[in-house]
Image (cartoon, rainbow, N blue to C red):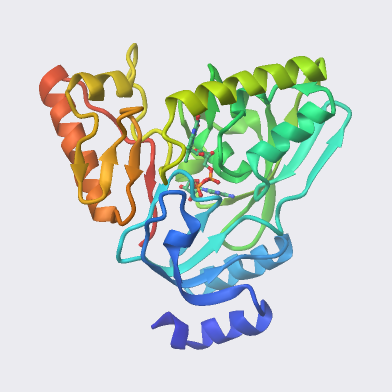
Length: 303
Ligand SMILES: Cc1cc2nc3c(=O)[nH]c(=O)nc-3n(C[C@H](O)[C@H](O)[C@H](O)COP(=O)(O)OP(=O)(O)OC[C@H]3O[C@@H](n4cnc5c(N)ncnc54)[C@H](O)[C@@H]3O)c2cc1C
């Protein structure tokens, strides 16, 4: 067990209170699903993040990075190696004229609220997206026809060897709910966004309207991970899943929401296995009925 090794002891000594063994990952995912992480670390600042990452890399231990855990599925067996959660501690936000600098552990909703309060437009689209800035940039999170790439100027990255570097937006390929950062082993540490002057009240009205629509159309009272599948060109995954007669279908405690067919909710004791079986069943049936292969948006993480 990794927790019995000197690597673990060294991490415990270097970052007291921020390292644990056997941490249940269900405590860190919006689905409330996921087995234990061998070692779990939540760095309190970027120097601690650098220390952990470089240390883990030096020892050849598998590393998994998570943010708010709102777009991931963690297996029931948990995660081998070290899980680093980039969250509070790495969540500073600052504003300069029409620019916003946010550390990757900051909630996207906090950034949007800071922009709104300063009369800066551009983040309205994100109203109600629950993840952190790092996850949002890596996933190119978006809604209401806009995604975060529209605001991004540059990011600060940390390499597995522990070196910081800057990448401009032009050096990153963005697509629908994807970016080249997903294939990069580097960690997003900070992002710089540009906004524009806009009336505060108008920003608030637009954000409130987006939120109201979400509350009406999404099963937000249940643990979930947002949209399961990406929308195929010219259609929506929700419409196809509903047309395949799958709304309400259940495996164990995992259920295709009766409110929004592209959401799988956890009714209480769903396992990752239940979710995976339901995802596979949905994919197969939609392919069989409509000849369209749905691609998952949610990421299965861990080793
Ligand atoms: C109710 C609900 C509604 C949602 N609605 C939307 C929506 O409208 N639009 C949308 O786009 N998404 C939506 N999502 C999904 C999710 O909120 C976004 O994808 C979010 O941006 C993910 O951020 P996170 O911090 O939770 O990332 P996580 O789920 O923790 O991680 C996602 C991926 O990013 C990687 N990652 C995370 N942080 C970093 C980092 N700092 N550096 C490098 N890699 C990192 C992880 O390894 C993982 O592969 C929704 C989710 C829920 C639960």
